[in-house]
Image 1 (cartoon, helix red, strand yellow):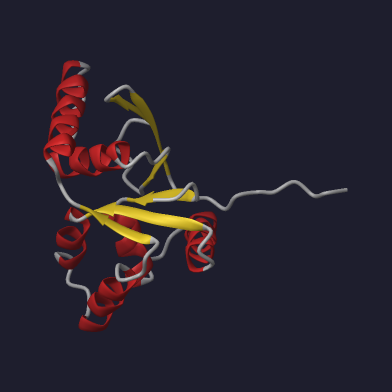
Image 2 (cartoon, rainbow, N blue to C red):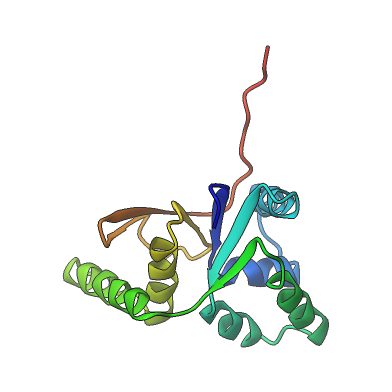
Amino acid sequence: MSSRTLYYWDANIFIAWLTNEPRPADEIAGIEFQVREIDAHTAHLVTSVLTLTEVLAVGVTADKRDQLKRLFQREHCHLVDVTREVAEIAHDIRVTHLNQGRKIKTPDAIQLATAISSGCPVFYTFDKGLPRTINANGKSLVVEKPHPTQYPLGL
């Protein structure tokens, strides 16, 4: 991947986007902002191949399944395989947080580990149960909801 901005979307972001799920206006604006950057080829979209399983499990329509498949045919949209490195990072995430009294489910740990392995600085999700920061594999990952980026006025 190039030095462009990397957006890592958890499966629930795709579900919200594909199903027009009712979300607060700032969250919708955040998704729309990222989609515009991805469409303009100024950013890359990254997610785990596990996202396909999670999204298709919610019963999206055939049209939406096709839309998702077409999305990942673009050169700047990346489905990342679950590799041994990802599995080991996911294991470390689960153990570290379990030792802190917090259970992270395996699919969430795989998604987080994929983001870390892919070099994404932020993990975008609507999941309220995840810690705000994940440290693994010598890297730190911020966990937050999508939000529109504010640019200063050039006055």
